[in-house]
Amino acid sequence: MSMRTRVLLRVSAASLLLGATVAAHAANLGFLNDTPITYMKQRDVDSLKRTLTGALNDKKDGETLKWVNEGTGNSVKIDADITLGSTTDDGGRNCRDVAVVLNAKGQSVHLRPGFCKEGGAWQLQKRR
Image (cartoon, rainbow, N blue to C red):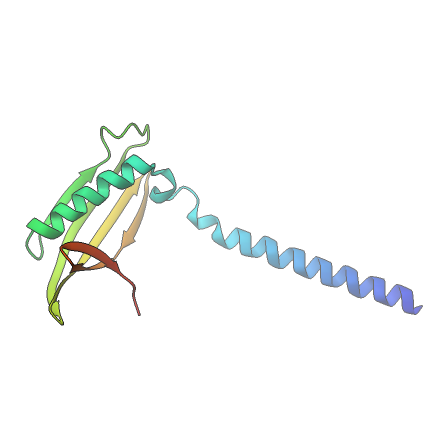
């Protein structure tokens, strides 16, 4: 086998391997399609934020409330169960854990954001 043929075979094999890797990676992210978040429009997000802020301010630990995107103009019905978790003091900041279950078109996404009140406004906290 000539040197040129070997190089072409190696390049072809590498291209096939790279193509298969990219396709597999894309396929692995396919589970994100059709999740409730993909159906949310900005008005849904804004409405959910308002409801979540009200819950953080007014609800007690363990209380659950329901959010529905009715009236946002989205043709896809999206709802969420929002459950307030524990409230803690973190160096003078009031912090709360929340469990949010978003539902749309038979799919559910479970989120566990944490918030701390800084300067009068609730701020989403990054997980470490």
